[in-house]
Length: 193
Image (cartoon, rainbow, N blue to C red):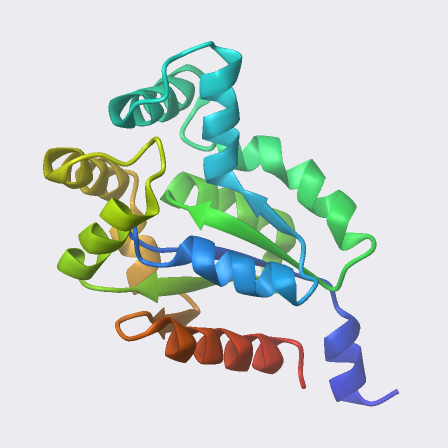
């Protein structure tokens, strides 16, 4: 068996990070359409909000995320996610974690999967990200003040450091077609094809 073939068969976990509205969800959708299973940290918060029967408003999502971290540790979402990712790795060569936001989460993932783990950061400037957030209409999105508060909260968890030190970086500053092409190119390089 060639070295290249062995690399392709080694299961990998990739976590995508980026500031709100950068394109993490679009990146995840592209990988999902290529058959890569995606687990979303944001979906975990959205599910927690629903479980608690709370109104889905922009500030509630941030409050629930902060409460979970305060009650169970900064790494609570990562710890809860690991077994699910391992289950997926048993039948898939690559699993994507969408929405890495904190250095505590990064420490859990890195410790769990070692060399089989890497990060990719999606970058876009603040104005473009705010425009995208206004267009997508998610319940956790709000006005400019909510956008700024969310940026600040996620930076406080270490998101800016994660972006700066990511293994790979993809720009999402131009049209969707160009970003999709970058995503496909990145996926091809990771899978060794």
